[in-house]
Length: 140
Image (cartoon, rainbow, N blue to C red; front, side, top):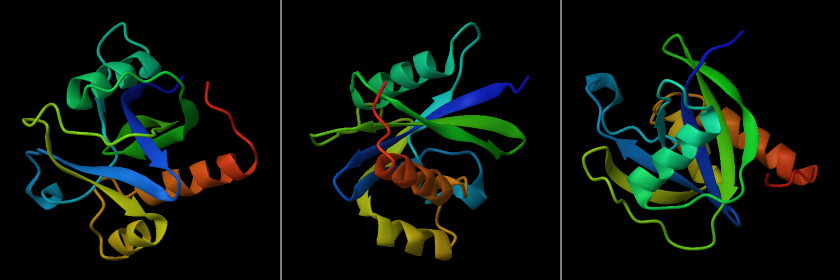
């Protein structure tokens, strides 16, 4: 059985995707952009952790989410979900999240090319989401 250690979210609206710079103790990751999210607490499911993290970091209550997939990062699996959001998101937890911004797909491809993505699976996750949306995936 795969143990999922963290949950992440792709917020999307039209042709843009929401990325953040997390406060990190890893110098090589400082200033890199990634998907919002965090670690799963004991007895918490990945979707419960996602909802908790999005509320703590952005005061966002997630209603509907799409399961995107699981990716390995630093020897731990991260479960990625997605949620359409129709309003501006503001940082609520400034100790965990330093910056946030909306990016187009092309801009994210450039961040990936320039090695400016935190986990290096962000583009793959967004690619998978785009495929799911084209095939008619619905929020859960």
